[in-house]
Image (cartoon, rainbow, N blue to C red):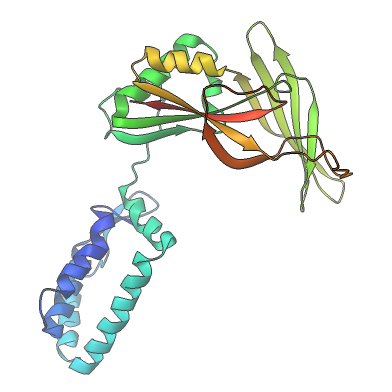
Amino acid sequence: AVFERDATQVLQRFERITESGSDLLQLALAILQHLRDLTVIKLTGSRAALLDISDDLFDQCVAQANQVEATVLAQCFDRFSRVLEGLENSRVPKLVIEMGLLELVQADVLEIEPGSLEPADIVAALNFSFCVFKQREQLRRYFANVHGGLAEQGLLILEIFGGTKAIDLDEEERELDAFTYHWEQEWFNPLTNEILCHIHFEFPDGSKLDKAFTYDWRLWSVPELRDLLYEVGFSDVKIYWEKVEEESEDDEDEDDDGMLRGTGEYEQLEEAEQQDSWLVYVVGVR
């Protein structure tokens, strides 16, 4: 379950309560009431109180709290403060709490009207997902919807690949610890830039998982993306090109599969040399 309202401010509220007075008993009762008032959304989608107890049971808790010695309360709050500090300094617990701010929307991105959702700071279409739109008007409509749904200076981040081998009908493999990864480019139409790709897995026991993933895309070019982004109203478009590992002339690694290795480091460019393969982020600024 996740908090329904003001989830990221829960810790701050607790801190304000702890700073509100020196009476540990009143402090304990205030926190107890605060926890009872919080509402959570369960994984099933239903809503419930964090402390879902009856008035009688709550009164019993209050009565029991009145009987706790001050030294015990002090120890509890000391431990509580350490838990708070751990939450504030750890990413994972914060992420769990901030999940309360998520709004899950299952809808066609071409049908969502601008203004129907809270403005977003960032929209990310990664792993070439927008390439499912094969017609220019479809992609333009998607970009226009995103533009209308972004906050001022919001970003649309697009990930796209290319290079001389991007349109080859070929299969490349990479051996990993638990399996061998196969990337197959089965079909490409140079008149439409449509491409059909598959991912297969091969395991040490000889078994295979063919076509675990299939991608039916149009391989858009960077200039096409940039022109469309400007066309729908983005104020600026920046291109970030991934650096690759430099190959040594003396490298005689028998396991070299000939694939360029990305470094995960990107630099903003306006001009680049062609490579066998490359990855870029095309970033539209509202």
